[in-house]
Amino acid sequence: MTLSRFLSVCSLVLALVFGVFASAHADSIQDVNRLMKQGQHGQALEQVDKHLAGKPKDAQGRFLKGLILTELNRSGEAIVVFQKLTEDYPELPEPYNNLAVIYAQQKQYEKAKQALEMAIRTHPAYATAHENLGDIYARMASQAYDKALQIDSSNTSAQTKLSMIRDLVGNRNAAQARPAQAAPAPEAKPVAARPPEVKPAEPAPVEPPKAVEAAKPVEPKPEPKAAPLAVGSTSADVARAVQSWAAAWSKKDVKAYLGHYARDFKTPGGESRAKWEADRTQRIDKPGAISVTVDDVRITPEGADRATARFRQHYRSATLKTASGKALVLVRQDGRWLIQQERIGR
Image (cartoon, rainbow, N blue to C red; front, top):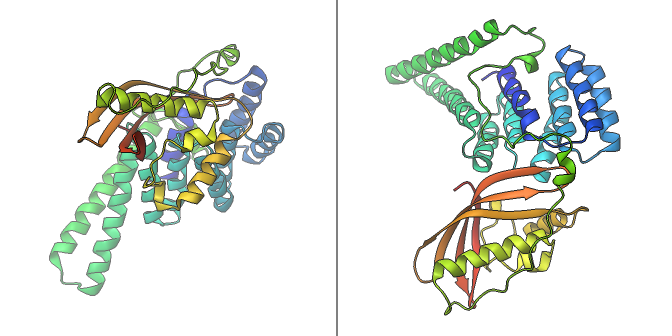
């Protein structure tokens, strides 16, 4: 797994992931991209810092800063940038992918694996993360076989497997070099390399600058009240609960939003319920309107008091527009369908 491969992939999808920005914003970002392609990373960093001074929350500028810091071998600072992006924009897989770049450089393969798993959980169709995760597994396997041979140098099985892994990694490195020959780029500027076989996974649609006004969140419909379980089918009741949850989120009604989660809700990463609620409250209460809508809702009943809802979630704010698959496991408690588990992907 090479740094240039990761960065080239992320640079390739960057313009697609953050598709809707004003013209002044675009000019500023284009200047940063131009400086990066010219290998003038110091000047690019100065330019992006100026941009972020006026737009400190801008996701695209922050992502570019992380790339630049990585190029300048300021890994610690780059990690901070990408980690904060994953906190503020958990729907985006690219920051997780770039964290894995740095961890792999540092031979922290377990951390790299965890970052890539988060990228895949966020975007299950992100083929690059799947491929990179395979590379990480190969590196970890090589380390394990090396350790086995250190303990028992006569272990012929470990010798054979280690040889196979090294051949595989060697072939991968050779295969990755071929696109670079077809589209040459200076070795010091891996960001400019664009392997033709790599395709971004379900990028957000590119829209012209005038779409900024159209991107203003539509006034959400009033939050529907939860219907009694005795009325209508289980699927209809669960679907109404999902729509009610999305409406509360759109209205930034934190109390109603959190009220859609069950008492035994499984928080991400096993953190405490109090910490999770505090983090969600902080994110939802940020200035600016948001819109959350769901479509293609599919309900799978799993008994009288449990069901899974799978759907496409569309999130929109003044600076971010994403669409991703999501699944909610709901249980019936106190006459309502409440969320017990939430995960990205269907």
